[in-house]
Amino acid sequence: MAAERLARMIKHLQPDQEAPGVLSMQDCRMQGGSPGFKVALLGASGGIGKPLALLLKMNPLVSVLHLYDVVNTPGVTADLSHTDTSTLVRGYVGKDQLEASLVGMDLVIIPAGVPRKPGMTRDDLFNINAGIVRTLCEGVAKCCPNAVVHIISNPVNSTVPIAAEVFKRKGVYDPRRLMGVTSLDVVRANTFVAEVLGVDPQLVDVPVIGGHAGITILPLLSQVKPAYSFTKDEVTYLTKRIQNGGTEVVEAKAGAGSATLSMAYAAAKFADSTLRALRGEAGVIQCAFVPSQVTDLPYFASKVWLGRNGVEEVLPLGPLNEYEREGLAKLKMELKASIEKGIAFVARQQL
Ligand SMILES: NC(=O)C1=CN([C@@H]2O[C@H](COP(=O)(O)OP(=O)(O)OC[C@H]3O[C@@H](n4cnc5c(N)ncnc54)[C@H](O)[C@@H]3O)[C@@H](O)[C@H]2O)C=CC1
Ligand SMILES: O=C([O-])CC(=O)C(=O)O
Image (cartoon, rainbow, N blue to C red; front, side, top):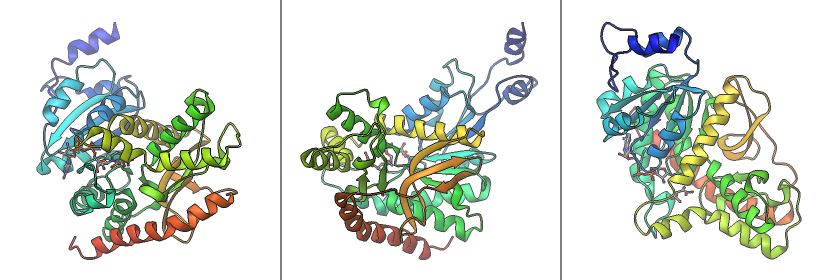
């Protein structure tokens, strides 16, 4: 049988090396294995990284998965490589291996960086995470400048502008290929709205716009699907709970970090949508924090149409009610400051 013949040809695969003198896993794929995308996960040993790596390895669209971190990727990779899905997983550890982890990648997902503890804002993470995102994006610019990049590291409202400025400085910027991951806000909104409506959350779709911190997270409950007319109290409760979802988890974890499992779930869904769109599937629409012209801010989260090139079109916000218009007016000042902080950070750097 073909599968047995291939199995005999692959004697033993170490995470980072192909067995000498036998067909490489890549060769085997070229002889009939499932084609797919090459995905790198930077920050793969962390609270988000590990479950996200598992979910990506279970995705048939991912043919090669590179796990990069400054610690522990050999163990994570060895463990994950024993799961019987066809995705080839390789591990890379330490900054000397960053470039090798990035060469040839189609999609790079970045959850590297420190998480919040109770009492902190996402902006309190800026001083550490800004430099991490900058360095990782320099690697992307050098080794896989055409890759789509998903930024998870907080504060997303600043780290996405940081990534963009790095790519601009390196001459590889394509706004269609840079996305801040805000899908957890949508996942939370769907869950909390479904609780109020008493329906399956999989049937609910709430667009969430703005950014990814506090009041910059603005659910558009007037556009919920299936259509529903919430009371004023329901709108206030749901909006605050969605805006506070991250803090709710940070407080419950009491110093042990922030959302990891729900974030991995949301990131895996967003990655799957992106890959389906890159493959040519029509009609893929998700919310993301992207370079945008739908408001007067240069970056904004809203529904985007994903396609073969990444973001094909940033969709208009649609009709907002008075509560949402007020929320939008309030969030813009905070979001503007966070965006400018990211841009100013890169302007001060020698890249
Ligand atoms: N966009 C969103 O909706 C969400 C964003 N986050 C953010 O994601 C980030 C990661 O969160 P967790 O996984 O819980 O944190 P964690 O501390 O568990 O894991 C972070 C990982 O990044 C690694 N790392 C640190 N510096 C690195 C570098 N220079 N290169 C590569 N890897 C590096 C660490 O070794 C660690 O394994 C945080 O900034 C957090 O605020 C968290 C939840 C939701
Ligand atoms: O709240 C945090 O620090 C992590 C995060 O972004 C979220 O859970 O939405």
